Amino acid sequence: MNNIAEHQKDLDLIDLVQMFIKNKRMITSITIILTLICLGLVYFVVSNNKGNIQRNSTINILVEDDAGYDSKILLEDLNNRISSAINYEKWRNKNQDLSKFLSQKSASTLLVISKTQTINFNYSSEQNLDAKISYISYTTEIVLKQILFDFSKQIKEIKKKNIDEINEEKRRALKSINHYKNKILELNYDIEVAKFKSSFFAKYNTNIAELDGNIFLSLMNNESNLLKNKNEIALFKNKIDEVKYQLETLIKEKESKLEIEIKDQKTQLQGKIISIGQVTSNEELVLSNKDFLYLLVPLTAVLSLIFLLVFCFFREEYNKSLTK
Figure 1 (tube, helix red, strand yellow):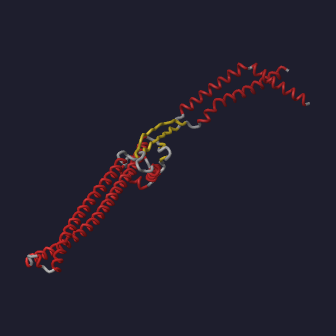
Figure 2: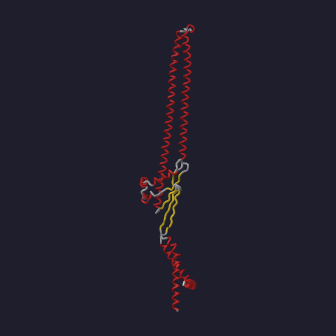
């Protein structure tokens, strides 16, 4: 029984192949015709299917290198401001027309990719694109203004610190100068006393040899102190000049250092630390049921071939039954 069944199967397969060869022209012709009809249908569907136009845009965010600021922190600040409702309201107040094409919800979805320093987004129309570019540009300018404000504040703090240090040095110098001046006043007083003593002895005791020993020693000490005091006065005057010179030198050094520091800061801010770069946009037509259309042609051809084989098989069987 098994051998008979296998023989019957072989016969059926042979009959099927013979039937295909016998009707190959008709099968090929009908397959081609059905394929052309299918292609025509596909063309008709595609040509009448407007699909969806997908518009994409990319904005480069430029961050200056070696500007003294961490680019990651700047981009985080930019992202925070983009998603801020207050920032959106400020932009909307200045851009009433454009704000009609960009909602706060849509604006908050814009995001700077830190790795590529770009913002990628879809847009529905040219007005929507202009609105998004305007919003991003406005927010970037706000971040830049904040940087400039921080810089100005930092410069003021540096200047204040410099002035405080100079005033402290002036206070110390003035204290030293007043100390030396007081010493000079004391010495001048001693000099005047010594001069008075000398004039007194000169008036009443013109002959030094006739003076008492103690009085003579007192006179000599007085003359010695007079000379000593004059030398000390000259020394204190030199110290006053030295303090003044040191103070002037210190002030010049601090002012020069401050000028260099401010100049370096300004050099870093000569270009825009953060700004918008190139904006690229493109449009792409996205067809609906695209995958189905790609499968339609081969699927139709295969189904048509199967249909023809079945049709021819039944026709052959029908013809055999008629001849019996």
